Image (cartoon, one colour):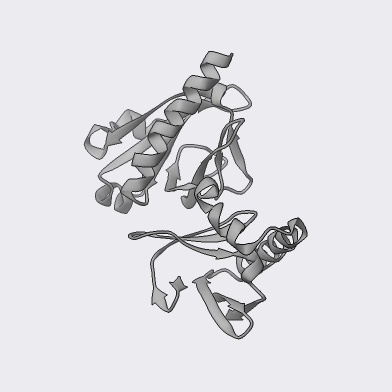
Length: 218
């Protein structure tokens, strides 16, 4: 992705107010939806423009997925326009909306492939923003979580969590495992890789607080 003329490697998250660019290293970059006047395609890239100025661009290599991004951004921008909030208000809301960024590796048979995702602590559960179809884990269904160095992720755990690519196994130092029961009552262990250290530092205490509140309220 490219923001302000700088090429970055990272993740793009669409909220109902902003497009958030989360690089592998460095601070988040934000484009308010209402500041986007035009979306153009340049080969595999989506280019976001305000009048004649380029705000940002990011690569989407599948044509169908690229068209879906355009539609989703236009719809979200239309809703943002209807709310009538100032662009500054939309930009200032990013800290409350930005998802903790991870790579889902395995664990749910409905999601056999890995993908970049946000983990969002909603009022009613933990949501994966990058999953299709969407996945929401109610807090009362989350049985526990743990951070495991790769050397402690035993063969049994790998089998329960699902297949991991050998290349991923070699490069990942540790994983986040979240255990929960799906809507059929089957216990699953989802495995995630953090995109940055901030994902752990900010997300883990917040997840613990949500789980504690859910259990105290039940």
